[in-house]
Length: 223
Length: 223
DNA sequence: GCACGGATGACAGCTTCATGACAGCTTGGC
DNA sequence: GCCAAGCTGTCATGAAGCTGTCATCCGTGC
Image (cartoon, rainbow over all chains, first blue to last red; front, side, top):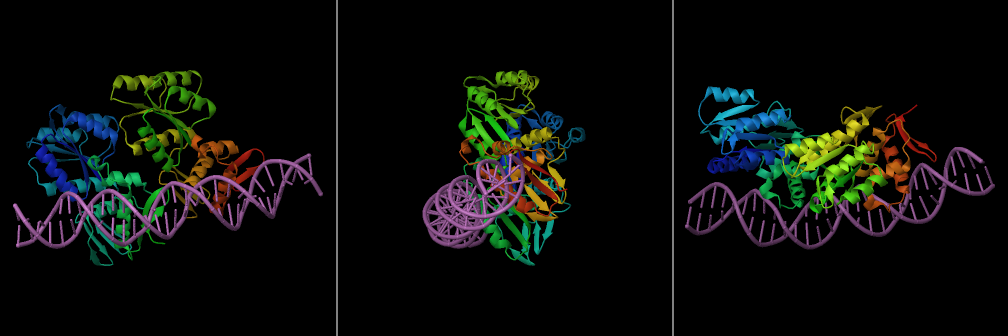
């Protein structure tokens, strides 16, 4: 799950990125509208966190342009003050949610989870498949009732695969979902590595990650 | 589905070719306009990815010439900067879509799929024929509800045959769709081989691949 | 029956993937 | 601020299976 954070105050952006990173999101930071446009054109995001006050314009313009261009990526707007007018304006222009600054990082994470979950067409964060019980919100994973510890990257990968259950996911796609631009130089072998680690932890759960040579990976129920 | 990538930056071209190859497209790369003209004259393409800035001229000239010559091959233009003028100009000259560089490979794949799909007159990527259920996007194939695994080449061949369902496809056409120039030395027997492999996997689906001696193959419903 | 195009099984080469070991770095506890 | 523990990603090696060639057999039309 890749998130774009459009925010010129680097403290806030960094903190959000770090916090969301911990929660399993891969974040890119854009300090200006120009950067944001460039990033959004380059790659697709699961959601965009958008500050309204930016050095080269207002986030509302960005949002409006995006929506007019047919982009439906969920957008969470950050408003500096509790201004009803601004809030309503942003929502009218296509924002999916808003948060008043200063905000709590956990709150941001929770709301993004709601937005990205809606995108994937799931009704709740918790997914049960076979004897697998995965809660993206609590980042908890259970296999046959027993808690299994998994690292951030492993959970991110699992989340991606589950969101695209039954579909063959090309390695590039998984790579994009797990790593932001800052990690662009990570070897693609890494995906294979994490698939192997995940498989070990999912063994006996009735859920398998199939390899489709030359195509990608697919998660589904065994059999 | 054969794609011509007209792009002088070899990194970009190679990456796109690799990614699209995974997605089931066979790609040829032309680093100059002269190469592009040569390739386009030699063989037909399902779509052309066209960079505008090339060492021996602008892609717009190429595009205009092609359209004047009656060539309707879908063209996706790559523009270096977010210049509305350039974008509109290209669209006016007959481009079917555009993408701003640097672009995301998934985006490129998705858009090419739209362009080539439109060509084949299909409304969505998913096709159901008899008890066959084929989704070009998810690269998934089902026969009578059961998932059937197929390799990249098999899927590419199936995609071609389905896109031209009911029509006799000459072996050369299939060959061109499956292999780019880089594999030009592959024996034509290979097509027969993959037809045989596909037939095995499609058996009992109500869909057959008929042989028309000296003419080619035709996919259609049985009976 | 003969010739030619096509079908198909077997196989070797090669790409792609799996996985264990390891070093660097991050994180959290004290 | 230090230390320990564990997460991360690289590398190397070996396995797996996709790919295309070859040889042989089939079947169709003349």
